[in-house]
Every structure is written in C-alpha cells, then in structure tokens.
Amino acid sequence: METVINLEQRISEKVKELSFDRQRQVLDFVEFLASKSPKVEFKRPDGTPMSALEAAGDLVGCLDSGLGDLSTNKKYLEGPKAK
Image: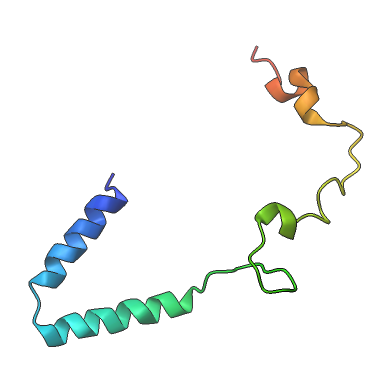
C-alpha cells in the first residue's frame, strides 16, 4: 500500500521533470480538482469556525433508545460475546 508521503514525493519528482509550461498545466489541473471538492466549514454567526460537536449540538442526545449513556454501560460497549 502506497503512503500519502510516498505518493506526494513521486508526484513532486515527476513534476520537476516537466517543462515550466507543463508544470503550469499540472497546477491548473490540481486547482481545478480542488475546486470540485470544496471543504465544508461550519461557522458561527460571527464568522468564526465551529467544531463538529458544536455544529451537531442540536442532534446530540436526540435519539431515545432507552439505553442511557453508553459510556457508563461497559457491558453494552463490549458487544455480544463470541460463541
């Protein structure tokens, strides 16, 4: 399995072998790809970033499963025993 660092290194080495015009094309393509998958960022009304917990705050505890707080129910967290 190829690691991200190895992949980045291979890409960098290949790009260095290209002419300036080709490198510019690679940069344009990478920027195009990046624009197609924008990062989702949640912000507070004042524009400051908010954590995932804050963004999902109104969903925390919204399910009524009757199980209570699973972090205090160690037996349930272990799951079913293998037979």
